[in-house]
Image 1 (cartoon, rainbow, N blue to C red):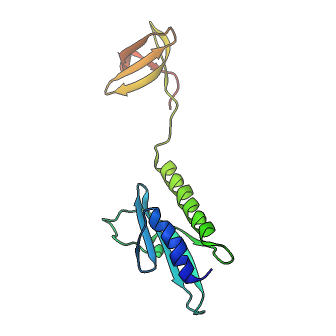
Image 2 (image 1 turned 90 degrees about the vertical axis):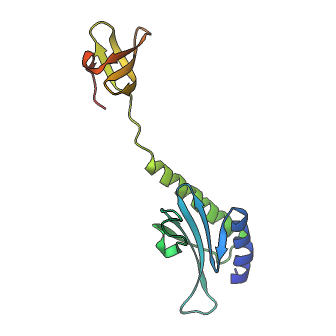
Image 3 (image 1 turned 60 degrees about the horizontal axis):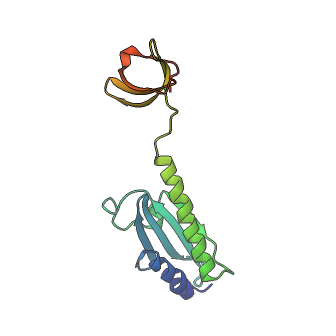
Length: 157
């Protein structure tokens, strides 16, 4: 694939996805950071070039125009023998997959609800906690708000 065709086909597709271009670098800010696509010329072969993609985990206010080598997550995209739409799809898929991984890692780990017992009401599951009180769904079908000191934790999360 020729460099000019990459700029036209892949760059045009990235523009439609909300990327902005400056020189041979395209960027788009997302919830998880700044996605970067770059065409890098080869130092050793005048006609050769590389397609680099990455995600900078900061914000525009931190680094207004991060370059691909500033990115914490980086990948080189194979382009030889492929058409522009195929290359663009590979780039879009990589950003989607890595974006989901970033979001998954940033979510707090889920914990199973705590189980408690109460002298009068029996066993139950903690629905919510606030200050020194717990909202508990008991096995008899009732829901009660009780102070922590009146329940015994059966399992620790």
